[in-house]
Figure 1 (tube, rainbow, N blue to C red):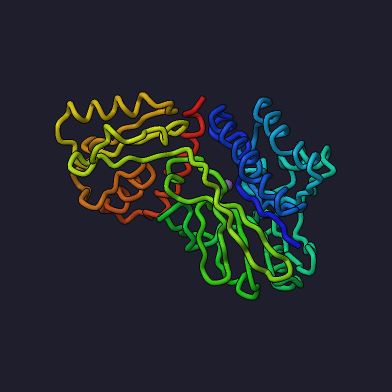
Figure 2: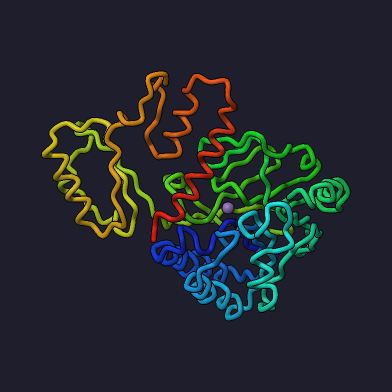
Length: 354
Ligand SMILES: [Mn+2]
């Protein structure tokens, strides 16, 4: 049998922005469900972070998600097994109070919320399902991972050494030691797709932040007989970067700019040249139906006298801040500083789009 795997779909992301709701709707309507219907797939496994905000939900986002996703499960006869991710749980030290149980478990026969470590059989394949690991369930999860009878794991893990977003590795996460005995470990949590040995971060299916730009997104199909994992590309993007170098920008006046419609656009100026030409280029971009335009022109304002800024990349705020921190001369734990700043930025970004 074939099962579809989703993870980190973050209902209500970016402060329940209409733009992101529309974008999520397009993914389910035009990409995900058509594939499932065409391939007669009736089972979804969701690896956590169904909702975005640990503590609240916006009624509009909730209703919208019910219409575009949950009601479609019912309509198409699809069932979903789901584990809790860190964004689905109210408290940091226990999974007991979580949005999945409150919003889906009680009302949806099509949704099976998995709160405790469990081995579930799909076709001829046993998959160990491991919800978000917290101080309360950690010891018991370790024991489960050492003893469970399954070759494959589906989880929401924070593992050391894997990329959190493209090019930014996680330091201080959990060791991969307890996962070595499995043939294949599939995990949500980090939003970029990456693999090391038997462990596969699937990456989220949609773009939510600038750090997702130019980072291809996929949902996955697992064949439970052959154990083949197939990524299915989601061609829908919502972020576009333009590198402006007046020497290489070419005949932009004749270029079809409609690919920028419905996108957040960032022009990264590497070599501005004639300012008048540049302004005309900006006008051209702004004439499209874009959501927002950001221009990254120089990073003068981010300069600190003590910082070696030759290596700083201005591609996006996260990369900029991270490379900036990398270049500070300090004995403090730079990885911890980066983790804290990233968390703060995510929080700020989620209130940025109204
Ligand atoms: Mn997530």
